[in-house]
Image (cartoon, rainbow, N blue to C red):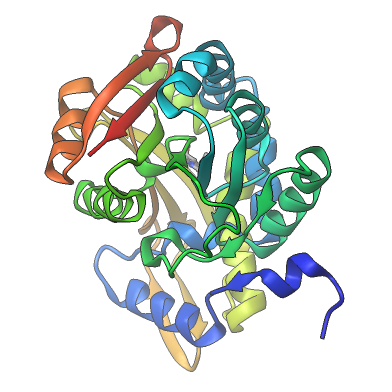
Length: 322
Ligand code: AVI
């Protein structure tokens, strides 16, 4: 066994090789072909995403961090003292740091993160800076949330934190299911603080997913490298190209890997023929307007208690309650 107390307490539901293989075979057999975006986040994928958040075109993270620091006193007033914070898709923990500093007497912090490396790195750093906060990490896909570890000290309410517009990576039906899961996990006194990207000039949105340095393209292609390593597929990275387009009527970025020539890819004993120019869907990034977001929340049994927007509606934070 490990002597590391963080590892011993870790609730670990990392997807195994059989699960990833089954998901990939199903996606490659569908038309149009698709791969699940959650598999972007291996150690290198999480690091590349961090790098994306620092690109000049990727306005989302900067806008959200500024907005969060500005409105934190209001959020803290809504939350009150002795809160348990549960974060979905916590990543590097930059926003968490702000939140844990700004809230009054946080009892426990539970990050739910699919990348084990990102989870452990961030919680180790947070444990040093917030010694009074009990750290209860969960390595899992938050769409299949396991029972959350209870804090030692009783909390007055649970605040679910879901920043980054990660909700936008799901179809509307899946996003409503996540919101419903949040409604259940938070209890009657609970709150959810959700970051959403807002609909705006398509040119600005498209640039954010096509940065000049090519980090987003590397991030998208890393999905194939990860699959090659973990499930033994033979995707040739030089034969696929990143493509991200904003589809105005759907208010979403659709990201694909486009086959640069006719080719055959092998996965777990199956052969998949790609046509030249064939697009394999890998990610949605939905952008929202207020009426649509409020309607989704309402369908999940939640209402918008407060709404804050960054200047020029570059990004939004929404506080939801039952
Ligand atoms: C994590 N998620 C909200 C990011 C987004 O903007 O959809 C992932 C990403 N994909 C490409 N760039 C960033």
